[in-house]
Image (cartoon, rainbow, N blue to C red):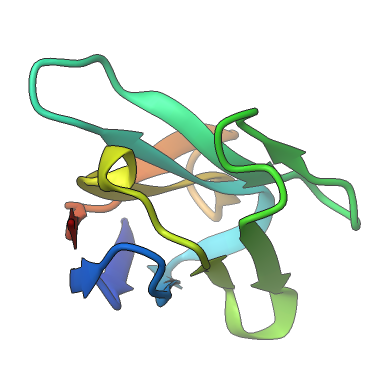
Length: 120
């Protein structure tokens, strides 16, 4: 089993910052992709930022230059630093990893989500 625990969501004013963190635990053999998705009310879940193995990063166009993703492989952690937040960033943010465990091949795992609300 793999568990993802997210933290760092909350209420922030326009222009403010938040830092989301996600820790993966369980019978993890290796983690490939780590990233963050979000889902706003009435909308589909969308990719915010992803960090495959290594140092490459992918960002949604809407967050480029404002959000920074980072990962700590030794701690199985992925973080999302969010600056210059806008009301349209309001959403539930989900941590995602693709990982191989001791018992299963590479699979996708999701956190339960953390709410980010940006007030104007």
